[in-house]
Amino acid sequence: MRLKDKVAVITGASRGIGRAIALRFAEEGCDVVVCYRADSGAALETVRLVEACGRRAIALQADVTRRKEVRGLMAVAVDRMGRIDILVNNAGVNKVCTFDEITDEDWDWVLDTNLKGPFICCQEAWEYLKVGGGRIINIASVAGQYHGPKTVHYAVSKAGLISLTAAVARYGAEWGILVNAIAPGIIETDLTRDELRGPGGRAVVGLTLLKRPGELQDVTSAAVFLAGDDQNYVTGQVISVAGGAVLP
Ligand code: NAP
Image (cartoon, rainbow, N blue to C red):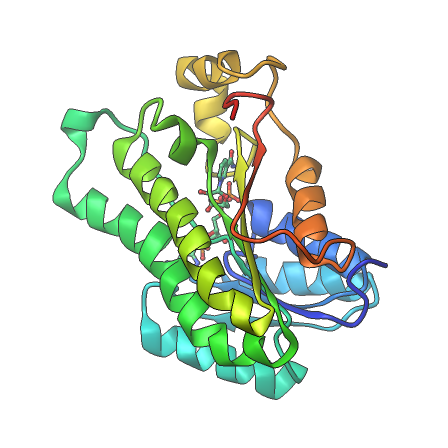
C-alpha cells in the first residue's frame, strides 16, 4: 500500500486514464475525489469501483476552466475528505486536425482545458497541498515533447503544461510540494480509439522504439511512483511513458 490513507483529487476521473489512476490509487490505499465535467453516471461508476477497493470516494462536478467551480471543488473535497495530499491534473481534450484547419475556438478550447485548467487547479489546491507537503502530477503528453506529430494546439498545450510543471515545482519546494508530469504516448481510451485504428495512430506507434501502444497500467504505475513516499526527491520532472518515442 504505497498511498495508504492519502486523499487524491483527480480531474477527468470519469473515464480513461483518470479513472485508471483513481482505481490504481485506491488499490494502493488512497481515497479519491473523482472530478468530472459532464457525465455524472460515469463518475459515479468510478466512485463505485473505488469503493469496491475498500476506499472512500466522492464524485464532484467542476469544469477545470472555471475558477469558481474549481474553488468549490477543492473546498468541498477538503470538507468531505479532510485534506488533499495529491492533485492529478488529468482532464484534457484534443481535436485531431491539421495546422491549417485549427480555428480560434479549437485553439481556445484545447489551451484552456489542457493548460489553463491545470494552472487554476494548482492555484486553488495550493493552500491545502501546503499543509502536508503534497504532490501534483500533471498528465502531459509525448506530443508536448515531440511538438506534434500532427495536432499543433494540443502539442503546444502539453508543452506548456510541461513548462508549468517545472515552474510550479520551483514554488512548491519551499512547502515540500513535489510537482511532476507524466508524458504518455498513445494509450487506447475514448480520446484515441478512432485515431489508434487509423493511419494517424499507426504513424504515432511507428515513432516508438517498441512499435506498440502503451497500456493504462504503464501510466498508473508512474503516477503511483510520483505520488507515493517511495520517492521524496523527484520534482519538476517529466516521466516519458511513450515506448521511447522521445529520447532525452
Ligand atoms: P478521455 O478518455 O477523453 O477522458 C478525458 C477526461 O477529461 C474525461 O473524464 C472528461 O470528462 C474530462 N474533461 C474534459 N474536459 C474537461 C473540463 N473542462 N473539466 C473537467 N474535466 C474535463 O481522455 P484520456 O485518454 O483518458 O486522457 C486523459 C489525459 O491524458 C488527457 O490530459 C490527455 O491529453 C492525456 N493523454 C492521453 C493519451 C492517450 O493516448 N490516451 C496520451 C497522452 C496524453 P467529461 O467526460 O465530463 O468531458
